[in-house]
Image 1: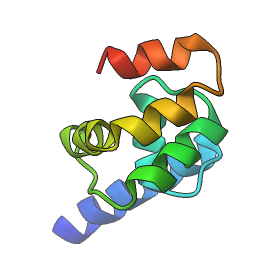
Image 2: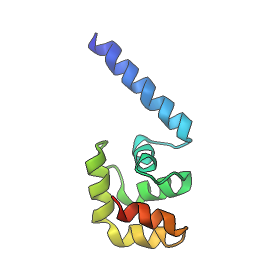
Image 3: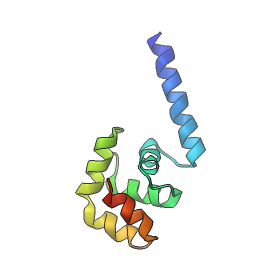
Image 4: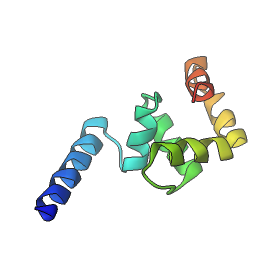
Length: 87
């Protein structure tokens, strides 16, 4: 039973990756935080690296890299900076 649950979870993860058009689950999580842009989500993933798959871990990693995140977001509409500040 556990094997089938794990398989279902992996299929759901794959479905999200394909649906969002991203390369990894952390980018998907960033997108789901409100950064609904493939390029921005991928760039933020590049900044924070492989931090784990918990929402709190991703948010903490973004905050820990505040200067780099703000520098990146400054290149895009203010909406994305507002999303970041609301985390």
